[in-house]
Amino acid sequence: MPQFKRQLEAMVKVESPSDDKAAVDRFGTLLADTVSGEAEVKLVSGGNKWGKHLLCRFGSKKRNARQVLVLAHGDTVWPMGTLRGMPFREAEGRLWGPGVLDMKGGICVFLFAMRAARELGLPLPDSILLQVNSDEEVGSPSSRPLTEENATKSEAVLVMEPGTGLEGKVKTERKGVGGFLVTVKGKASHAGVDFERGASAVVELARQIERIGGWTDLERGVTVNPGVIGGGTKSNVVAAEAWAEVDFRVRKLSDARRLERRFAGLRAVDYRCSVEVSGGLNRPPMERSAGGRKLFGMAIAAGAELGLGVEESATGGGSDGNFTAALGVPTLDGLGCAGEGAHAQNESIVLDLVPARIALVAGLLGRLC
Image (cartoon, rainbow, N blue to C red; front, side):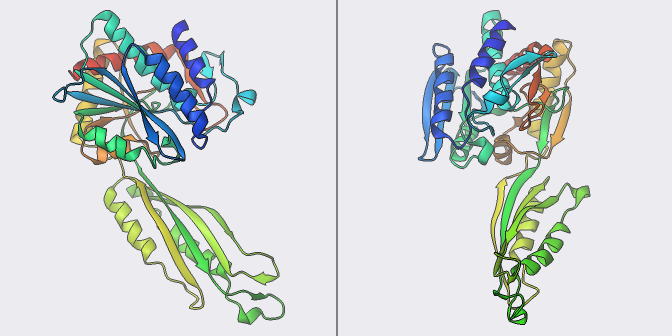
């Protein structure tokens, strides 16, 4: 474990917030140097705004080689300077620090699984493509086409996102994720002198939020959350404009389409106001599929050989695995570290469970030959 800890520490100490292109590129350079000699490395531009995406090919480059795609991301939600107040450290049987769980620990698990398989002479697929995206935490705006292109050339996709809970359950289902911006335009007036001449966008937005909030259906796994609102200028001015940012999550693609129609159909209660809606589904749901179940079965079998129990889970969060599953490519997620606190101050991984996860990933890769 000392080598794993040193490797992860080096990765965590290269801070890589999504919106800092130079910082994410520094992490990409570190990772490229780390796998030099083990894989063929290629950097793909993320455009003017996002960092470069990293492609690391292990094994054959032949066109007819059977390919497994391994997905990861190098960006984190933590701003530059977070390490000063949240340093990488080992304590209480865990490793702590920004990005240690989500998901630099998962990248390390994959790299050590590959090294273990090679050292022990274990079988591996003809070609394994590790894709490390630079913009996953902000919705994968530049990496999604690359992910989908490589997924269509692959027989299976393994996602190194953290497992669920302290047990590290793998993920066979993820909700689809989307968002809408609802903008209401009214008519400004003096709240004391000409109140009746105004049409409050704030009041109209409140009516719309009440309606939107009612579209949550927990039994179907549908949540609709107007999470951020704003509007108006002064308390003595009838507001001319107001807006709300709405997050939604769905288990089924059909529910996403239903919500999109509902949002498109929003109309103002006060005829003097207008309602505008923009946005939609960002990540399609990763629905539990036959291909995903087959991969999960392989993980169970690989775990059984090691004396490990492997459990599955569903989650409301999205990953780049949502895109590959929606294409019909068998996808298994949550193969990274077990821990807690992703996106939170207590972000950490359980150190004792790391060797088992490395062995599981190596065993699963062997079954994909």
